Length: 317
Ligand SMILES: NC(=O)c1ccc[n+]([C@@H]2O[C@H](COP(=O)([O-])OP(=O)(O)OC[C@H]3O[C@@H](n4cnc5c(N)ncnc54)[C@H](OP(=O)(O)O)[C@@H]3O)[C@@H](O)[C@H]2O)c1
Image (cartoon, rainbow, N blue to C red):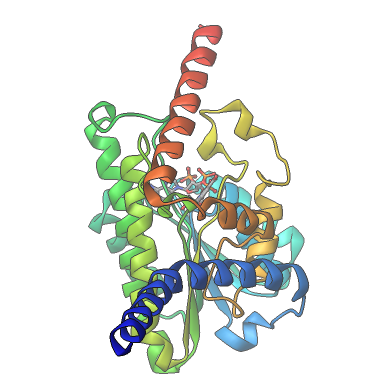
């Protein structure tokens, strides 16, 4: 009798442990969806985090749209991208939205690794950074097998996705710690959810961004610093130019403005989110099957994008 009770207790305990992970994960995503749909209270970012925000990769796509949203919220801005002309144009567009803020630009190429930081570091010396948005990111030109990706492109992806996020954080975290105030927003990607064949290195760098963000939060939240990790799914930007299907905006593939407007509304409220309610619904469904099935589905999806890319290239030739 006692042995039977002990046996069933053990079965219940093991079942509980097995289910704890998936159930917590689903509840978290459910919470993510509900929060984004119902919680519309805005936070005064300038008061909560400080007056200046840096956005890396801010002349196109999500970074540019996010910078505009920060401008609407009266944040002074430092825009960092490669091209000075595009930076000046973006600055002008932003000042039209809010002429009362200050906007500085820094032309630097994060693919250059350490060299980029010798340019950036002196220009940030006297600035008290309230928000750092580690947005800059690089993807393959189209879905490829690792052996096909040019060596230079692999270095660039690692330097931009991993290097820029890590070293930009290192650059500002000390002053935030001293002030006991600040936010770092790391833009990762839904490709971090599981390994993603044909975007293997890109997805692996985004898994780094997630791990980096979670550990960083554990280290620095006690100093009053917010570390937010965003994992958008597809957004209609030039990064996805390999697929004409992804160049059409829809509920599930929003334009950069829609994405940024939703994402910024989660800052200071959620540590980790897709940043956009419809992406959180997709995430909920995506996380249901086991990792091996998701990896297979990802591979099939990318094979289809790859075929589409070759077909369109052939038609254009
Ligand atoms: N779009 C999506 O579907 C999607 C989905 C998930 C996650 N994400 C992530 O979201 C972030 C933004 O993506 P996006 O789609 O907005 O990209 P995007 O449209 O390609 O814009 C990239 C921005 O980064 C700048 N940039 C590119 N390489 C740079 C470098 N080496 N040094 C400095 N600046 C550089 C570009 O400006 P210049 O060319 O003028 O330098 C541009 O302003 C990335 O981290 C990406 O991984 C995007």
